[in-house]
Length: 333
Image (cartoon, rainbow, N blue to C red; front, side, top):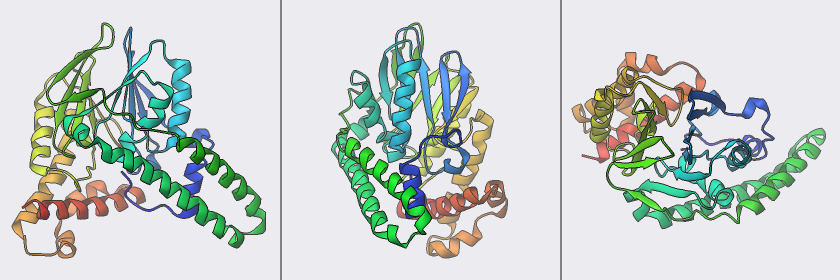
């Protein structure tokens, strides 16, 4: 989910990235079967983590980056790395940095079955349009960048012409993408087997109205999507349900490791942080329902603010997420 607008040239740098080591996600081995692809820190609120699970007969990818160039690089790496077919693609929810990149993986692995929440499946035609809208945005950005090219220093123009040419080539390729409909719709707890490796997929309505989480490694590892983010985005969520979901996860004594949609892995105890943030939003919105958002933000508990003021990116995200959460809490009344 995008939380702030990139400048035109920053956007093109992302679109045309050559995937130096600086731009790569970090691959972390959680168990012999599970790889956690953690997004770089500077993009941790802009783009998502992904998780790869590979059993003896099947592999599964949980979420995909919203950066299509990154997903193309990932697809090529998977083709070389996987010892088994990629059988399943799981979208934790509908936000574009989790769902739309799966179209790239579908093009590379056409036999992989897409798994989504039942509610997301019911609205699936909207997300093909969202894919087209995203590509339209890329095209407009490229066109505008060509118009601005003449204003750049002469020594930079050749570099940016090359970047724009690459961006156009990629856009032409991505225009062929289709987000194929889901093969499996999750409305209740569902069990799958990747080859002597059982997993469980569970539906929630928390961060959005159609979230999925997944447990693996005999229930010890939870793939929590954005439900379990340390700094949660509550702009589309059902906060009461969300708090109940976090409590339910914490009460599951089997879980030891949580892989969130954004940021570093967590322990169940560390879910107290998003619970505190979400609870404080509800408390503040309920206590002063007539106050406008701008007057509520300064009243938010200072200690919770300090917990999130780690760097510039985190501070910017905190303010935006707090505002979105207060709006959601007030509109849900």
